[in-house]
Length: 426
Image 1 (cartoon, rainbow, N blue to C red):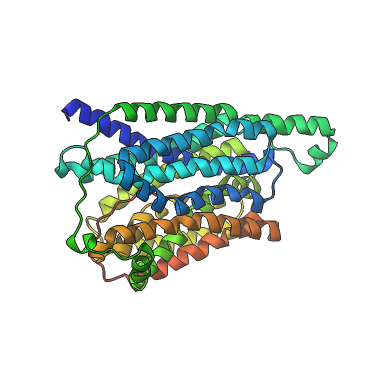
Image 2 (cartoon, rainbow, N blue to C red):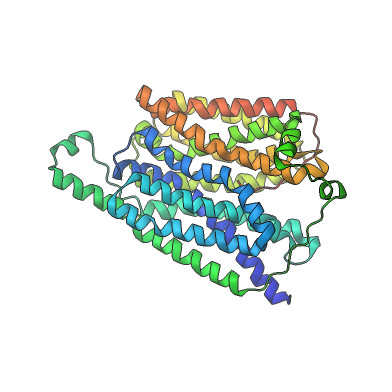
């Protein structure tokens, strides 16, 4: 490929990091929005995260099998088409105001995103000079962080209306007036998701028309000669204690990250009295802190043991969650916002610790660790249940506190590790 064509190909694949990051970070906007539009309780609204993260749990292995037959480019195009279909389905889902329809659309969106994540990381490393592979993938992942910052800002402006009815206000409305209000709220997702779907289809068309070099994967002789069933190889890997611990730690981390962000707007409303639009701006600031934390954390790891940083960050987040649960007013919201910064290094650090020493089994082991992100489907539901049972979204934040405690134990058990190669996009 010529240099210009290579740069264009890198730009297209980099756009995928932004696309799935943007979709995932719209969930904290969709949760309070659909809670209002579909008249849900906290437990029901948490299923938005479940629909998203379950797709990530189910699809990576089928995606890998598809790409083994049709190539990474074919997998990327299929992923983008699925993503666009799910985005377009938001229009009829809003028209009928059916929550199950919304969840189905989200599952399809993130089924496509699972294909994109499975393909984009290895693809970006082979586009161009091999010596620049690490630089390219870190550059691309920075757009995932950019998406995390922009999604709540854009979603807060174009999806959230800023109008939340109290029970007293709802009771004073006639059924027709209430229905008109709810339909208007639901319809606000239609145009944004039509735009998202259209942009994704344009990217799919550009990728279809662009020539990409084939990926030649390095495969060890042991891996090539291992013809045992997939289930047997997975069972053997799961006998490795460090891998099992890493999968569970990643399960806890993604559950904590999803839970902290998913109920942030509702938490800000209840604990500090913020309206939903101002709360979405605070969410944007917190997300920017996550992006800054990723860069600062990577820099700090040049001078400090990464596991010591993980221990320190976990302790700080346990303390911040304790403040968020016990304090009231703006200071409690600020404490919760700070957790984003200290979550920033957790996913990649845990990931690197988990696959350390796997050798020829690294690829399959990595897939199992990635599947640990199903925690994002579980812990927000637990938080929703706690909130409904206690009538306090604040007490629900005890759940991510326990998750951070589990991560602390994982880090302490890995204390002797001196250096890690940090990568990852969550």
